[in-house]
Length: 446
Image (cartoon, rainbow, N blue to C red; front, side):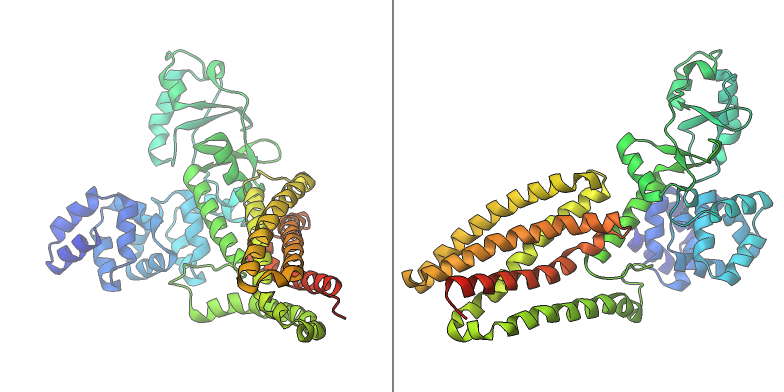
């Protein structure tokens, strides 16, 4: 689509460009804005119809949204802003600089300003911050006919009408009903007679990541958000939940790679920002690794007595780091998806120790065969030393890999911090201690 858009702009065939954009999906159109020049951004945006422009605008990256707002008139901006859903409007306000926020709010209807302010008052990581207050509520005493009339009257400007919530006179949530239920029942049937009164909801201050995981668990298209009095405040829709999971996954990947999370995409993050996000952890891990160097220095006598010991240090450290990384990755993933709970710590540890014992034994046998082939039968003591070291290192590494992320969650830290770099640094020191202590004992090295 990008090539076609550029071709039509170069030909100045704006009539056909408008037709192309009108028939295209909003998400596909928004991708074009990341590729085209700033001059063409405005040309393409002004070729969009009024309704299409608002839909596309909601998909754009914040920097593109800011550029467009700075280039269009207040009237054009007002048309776009007032067509946005409330949650998209709140996201826009949070991303824009203060001077643009004032201009945006000045061109926003009073009702929309009030709704946006309600969302912005909630903590950034809460369900309230991602909910939409544009929803249709029904009453128990309504008939299907009355409900359909209400949906037709209000539904056009709502983000979703597939799940509808039933409230009482005080706005307390009492039931849920789907459009399918409404369409398949007689017009005179009361909503209260066919609604499901076992409603699963979340509170305004529920962590938004927990909310997103509930969508996966229950296969919902929308989730009602209530306050402490069970009054319906808003709804979280499926698309917002998926965005939360995507953002959390990106954040966890960066933490697991020993980096502070970035606020922007890779290509749009400045070099100095990347430097700041990475250097602190790199310094910490480098200084932590000096303990491993001190341990190696302590065993210089063993090096002199049996020089071949030195050649196996990288293998032992890499094996330990890999074992720990495998365990930590699986446990962090399990914690993120709620498959693993903190109460499962002994069960998880016992499983990982058994896996470690089997892996360690296999690695030890294969390594022993390698040493026998390369150095002959005279290195039997070295085979035993390395075999025991690998088995113990695997057990310790996998134990740390499963326990440390769970302990981190217990004290309120993100388990992702206890991923590969951190585990590897700790296991390196442990594996070297094990290696040289076993070597000193079995090889009679002082």
